[in-house]
Structures are given as C-alpha cells and as structure tokens.
Amino acid sequence: MTSVLVIDDETALLRALRINLSARDYTVHTATDGISGLAVMARDHPDVVIVDLGLPDMDGTDVIAGIRGWSTAPIIVLSARGEEAQKVHALDAGADDYVTKPFGMNELLARLRAATRRIGPTTDEPIVDVGDFVIDLASKRVALRGGEPVRVTPTEWQLLEVLARHRGRLVTSRQLLQQVWGPAYETETHYLRVYMAQLRRKLEPDPARPRHLLTEPGMGYRLHDE
Amino acid sequence: MTSVLVIDDETALLRALRINLSARDYTVHTATDGISGLAVMARDHPDVVIVDLGLPDMDGTDVIAGIRGWSTAPIIVLSARGEEAQKVHALDAGADDYVTKPFGMNELLARLRAATRRIGPTTDEPIVDVGDFVIDLASKRVALRGGEPVRVTPTEWQLLEVLARHRGRLVTSRQLLQQVWGPAYETETHYLRVYMAQLRRKLEPDPARPRHLLTEPGMGYRLHDE
DNA sequence: GTCCCGCGCAAAGAAACCGTCAAGATCGCG
DNA sequence: CGCGATCTTGACGGTTTCTTTGCGCGGGAC
Image (cartoon, rainbow over all chains, first blue to last red; front, top):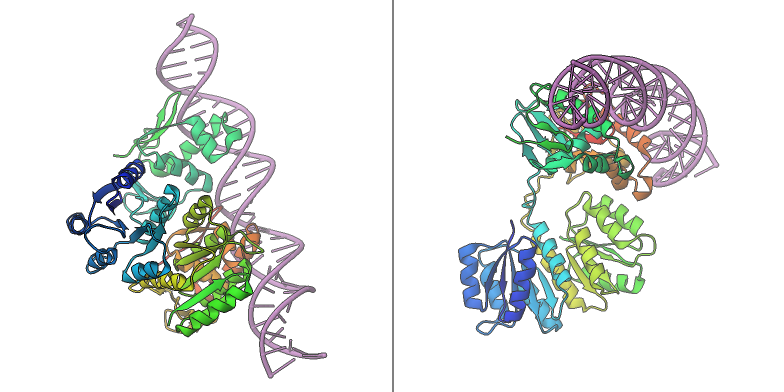
C-alpha cells in the first residue's frame, strides 16, 4: 500500500485530502508545519509527499531541499500563488510537480497516480502461488510447483486469470462466462465444464479430485490457494 | 546530452521550443503529427517527450499510450484546454506532467529539468542476453553468442526491440503490431508471422524449433531468455 | 426406488491460427 | 534511371484451438 505525507497548514484542506486519500487506500500521514513535516518524513518514510509552499514556519523550498537531501520520494507542491518564478524555484529545488490552488481533487489524485507510477511496480502482486502451481499474471505464464511450465490456450488462460484475480473467492458461472466469452454467452455453462476440465487435467495433481480449481455446485468456481 | 522530442502542429511554438531548448544544450527532435511522432520516438529514442494533445491526426492520449507501450521516457503534455477530465485522462494514460497553454517558457523548462532529473540514476540494463544471442538496445545491435554481429532490417529491429523490452513476458499480437506498424495495423497478424520467421532464421540456432522467439498460439509472442 | 438436473469426461468436425515460400511493390541510393 | 534491399501481399499445408455433441455418474427431490 502506498503511503502519502501531506504537509499543509490549512486544516480544511488537510481533512479533505485525508478523506479522499484514505478512501482510495492510501495510508495518510499529515503535518501542519515544515519542522514537524520533516520529522514525520524521517520517521515514517512515506512513498510520496504533498507539500504546501505557504507554511508558517519555513519557506517551502527549504522543506523540499530538506527532503531531497536524503530522499528521492516524489514531491508534489501545492501553492496559492502561481507566479512562474516561484514554480521554477520549487521545481529546481527538487519538486516533481507543482499544482496551483484552487485545484480539482481529481487532478491532484491523477498527478499522485502519475508520481507513484514512476517509483516502480509497488502496485500489484502479479504472481499467484496456490501451492501446486504458480500463475504469473504479468508474464501470462503458468508453471507447476517444480517449475515446469504448462502450456495453456488463450481461453484457458483467460479463465484462469479471472479466477486468479479473485483468488480464494467464489466466482459465479455468469461472471466467468461474461468475462471470458462475452455477455452473450452468459448461459453457456457447458463451456465452463469443458475448459475447467482441461485446466484441471493440466494443473491439478489429481484431476479427478481437484484441490484448487474447485466447483461450487450451482454457484460457480473458486481458485483455492493453499 | 539530453535529447527531447517535441510533437506539436503549431510551427510557431515548435520553433520557439527548438530555439530555447537548443540554447540550453538539449538535442531537439520534432514532429508535427502523432504518426510521425511515434516513428521518431521509435527511431531516435529521445530521453523526454513533449506532446501537444491537439494533434491533427491522432488523439493525444493514443500517442501517449503508443509511447508507454514500450518506453518509460517522461512525457510532458501541452494542451490548450485545461479541463480536469482531460488532465486526468492524459495523466492516467501515462503522461508525467500536464501544462496548460499559454505557459511560461521558464516554467516548461523547469518542468523539463524536473522530468530529466528523475531519469538520471536509472539502472536500466540496455543489454539483453538470451543465451544464443545478445541484444544491445542502446546501440541497436544484435550479435550471436560468438560475437558475430547480425544484420537486421529496421522493421525486424523494432519487433525485436519490443520483445526485448518485455523480456520473458508475453506480448500480444496486437501490442506488437501497434508498436511496430502503428495502431491501424492491429489486425495484420500476417506481418508478424513473416517477420518472426525472418528473425528466427537469423538468430535461432534451429529456426524450425525456436528456443527464444517463442509463439504462444492465439496470444502472441515471447522472448525467452536464458 | 426412480427421475432429473448439474457436472465431469471424451472425442470429432469446424474454424482459426501459424509457418513457409515466393512473387510483386516500394523505397533509398548512386 | 537502374539496382539492391526492404517491405507488402498472396497462396497453401499443417497444426492448434474452439465449438458442439453424446454419454455416464451422482446427489437431491419426490
């Protein structure tokens, strides 16, 4: 999970950001002045920093420089003043982005996504290990426990991918058919049986008694990880 | 020296940027539409891209997506329209920054510095060694294991490069066609077969039974290393 | 106990896909 | 303008994959 440090002395804005960021599964740290902002930065090592230039105790660029002294975490600057010289100053001090108030929350969130995207694939866990076989979602590959790769057809892979993305949870037949074959095939439950059998034959140690590609009678299927 | 690609159909702006960037020791490439922009991008591999959203031939976000398919170079978007939805759209497509016209040249230059500063300490491995041959992405060269260089045509190279940048991961036919031939060729899968055969003839020890340029039937191709 | 529906299994024809060869078409260069 | 290299396009056979069909099993309803 990505953590964000917000340094701003406007408590209203601080609260708005806390609500919006928390709702999107960011961990939020806050500070209302430069000194404590730097302290929180040093203590919690957030992944991204959002800092207001108009802090009561320090000049904003000094805060940026203080962070840049030892951290390369992306810094997004907020400012009520949009003068070009100030933007240049802040960016050259080490800021990654500069947003002028008033700004739209969606824009800030998009810029935040752009900043976090750069710091690498901290995003998802693209490998699902269920015990007897391993699904690599990024590479689109499946391998048995021993490491031996397994060839799966496009349809088999799509089916497996949907199940893997819902690992452990039940996926209804309708959901699977809709995702793999399209909305028009919602009732063709027979396809599921055929392809599920093929996947089991390729992946399960004992296809007749599946341990991971489980049937939930009358409901759907579930990828059980061990 | 840092190289910048500017994609914009306003020749006045293009000239202004060329002058300003050249004066600051950037190498400047230019293009006036999306298609040629992507072509220059693929050919010259600039370090940073500045792209106008209002291009005559393509939607700006498609240009961004086309670049993001295989490159992580920073992208700065220019736009006459400053609507929030458009900003969000462009940033989520892969842009790093969004500047609304009219903008100050100093601000743009500062944002450019911020963008290039980030790619400074990149740990990119520009050489891909798959065992039987070696791909040098920086100097655009391929050589067999023995060191003997292999001549590849421009199209062959582009194809190989996309695969190399996704080394080990599956790349769908659509992705390859879009990157190499352009978005209009997404369905011409025949090209892939012809060129993949040529690459295999040149690079694989046994072209009939490829060990690295692998086909994933119905899905795409994969460059298998080691 | 019997019926019936959902499920697993196997297999075969149809359709889509892939590799290969080779003949135009096009481009760049001298 | 001519030439070679490169890119496009077409045809064909072999293979993989998808769809469809049929059959048997087993559990729950009655």
